[in-house]
Amino acid sequence: MRHLMSPLDFTVDELDRLLDLANDIEANPEKYAHACDGKKLATLFYEPSTRTRLSFEAAMLNLGGSVLGFSSADSSSAAKGESVSDTIRVISCYADIAAMRHPKEGAPLVAAMHSGIPVINAGDGGHQHPTQTLTDLLTIRSLKGRLGNMTIGLCGDLKFGRTVHSLINALIRYPGIRFVLISPEELRIPDYVRDDVLRRNNQEFREVIRLEEALPELDILYMTRVQRERFFNEEDYVRMKDFYVLDKAKMQLAPKDMMVLHPLPRVNEISVEVDNDPRAAYFRQAQYGVYVRMALILTLLEVNVC
Image 1 (cartoon, rainbow, N blue to C red):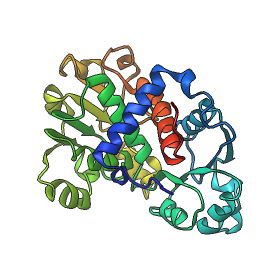
Image 2: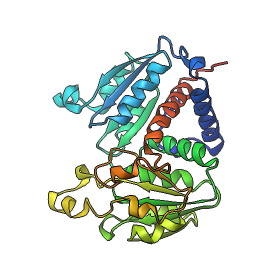
Image 3: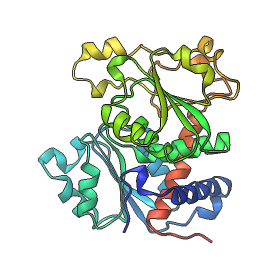
Image 4: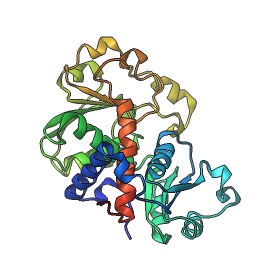
């Protein structure tokens, strides 16, 4: 039995096969419409989510399976003090696979250690968000035709942004990747990512504060929101939340083939006037998230579709 806690749980070859499967699902959805008939996915979401939870549910329903679960800790026995390990033991009696989001780093790993079914980390605090990373990789490869030899700008909350941390870990395994880390001093990438991931792997990167400085050199701009829920006080959040706003004027500085990604939800870091720009790919990115989660469910359940 296999779980997914981090993008690094898959080798590059396994990732390529997973993305190939996702592309085949996109091209031939009817081929997979009954692949998981009789299977059940449990969505165990201890903190709010729209895209991740609903895309997991859509993925399983598209495969012919069914879904059960909860969308907040308050609506589960966690409100009564039940531990994650006990919850997953019980859920293992009801479902075939589980997706867990939790505000505490490492909670899905604890669940996996006590589970009788595959567990997917759907986001744990500021740590990892591997299925968003799979979505990002599929989006980049589908739109740019490759996953190597490009310059990627990561902009916004790089300190608490688990999507950024996961994406860096995944992309350093591809050749010719160069990162431009765009953030205010207070939201710079954590030392453990800078030192233990980037520098340890001799990864090319530079850190800048101004978005305008980085835009002309980018193949991909990955925007992130400043996350209110990760701040200890409202004053710091208010001071940081409007530090970056991507608008039509800034987009004129970017290459004609640069793509803009965002894990969503956005607040105001991307102006709605950018939505009609052909380089805005964040809503297509959300659709790719369904395909890649379908591929992941099939892979972890070891379902082969001929």
